Length: 342
Ligand code: CP3
Image (cartoon, rainbow, N blue to C red; front, top):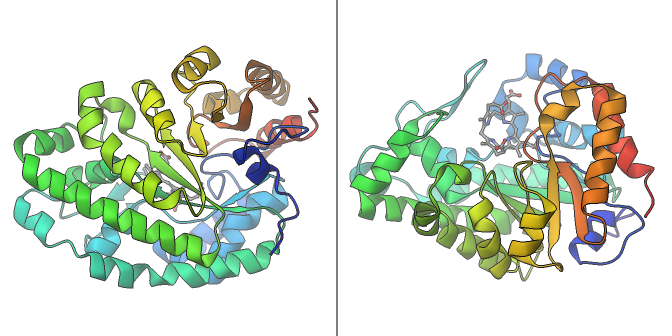
């Protein structure tokens, strides 16, 4: 199907466009009142596994806010779930995995076959979403990075420093390498499934990449992201994002992904020096700015566009939108970009 608004795809192909494209991380759900209605009615994984609900939630920001791309409503933790771990979404606490991985024997129990079988639900969900989108904008698929998934699988929940996850990698080098390997294979298979179902772009979220030292990053995160990127980049646009992983920028660029996501703790100078002037950069408004006023959001958004003028740039936040942002502040962000012209 031809895509009517293909601004994001043209930018990822490094073409000149009349304005930057815009979408933002965690745009599906959270701050939208209509999402809260569905959240009150259906539990998290029902929302993720039901085609009509996925289509409605994924496309809500396209219809209501006017972003240039949709991102599939799902979660990075569906992979640990598919590999055989129990995952609960506890209101007010976030994800909980009640039986985290603690030994090599726990790693041996994970099953790639079970994962592929479990995740078959995603194909009709993607198809329903694409049917409803009817070619308006491209659909982005995603997965978590193997390191970020290991963090949750070993820690059993979110954490400030993921010390348990690091300790597992330090004390069980073979089991942790095997865990990262299995998760990498699961990510590749799931992203290929998403591409076969019709997504045009995939993003790898290394949300906890930035808590690693550069040396540990080179061991526990980068090689696995490299494998995922290499397995997908011939068939789909790939975006690599490591929150606060300034030290990963140069290595990401060497993998030649379609784009690299930036955090607000980085700037153009660093990004361009590490990745060169031909790379496509995505980001990086501080999500906290959306707590200010629409006028301030507009000013900051224009400053961001100016910062990256002359480079390939996709406007986005530097991390996910906070849940309690007023919708008119989000509109100020999106409308500022959409009314801009180079
Ligand atoms: O962009 C989108 O909105 C698409 C859907 C999406 C969700 N999670 C839905 C969700 C995406 C892309 C994710 C990715 C995700 N999930 C990441 C990587 C991005 C990032 O923010 O760093 C991570 C680390 C997770 C793990 C996770 N899932 C956490 C920490 C939480 C709880 C806190 C929260 O709200 O983010 C979740 C639950 C979750 N995943 C919710 C949503 C909309 C909130 C629960 C709900 O609405 O019922």
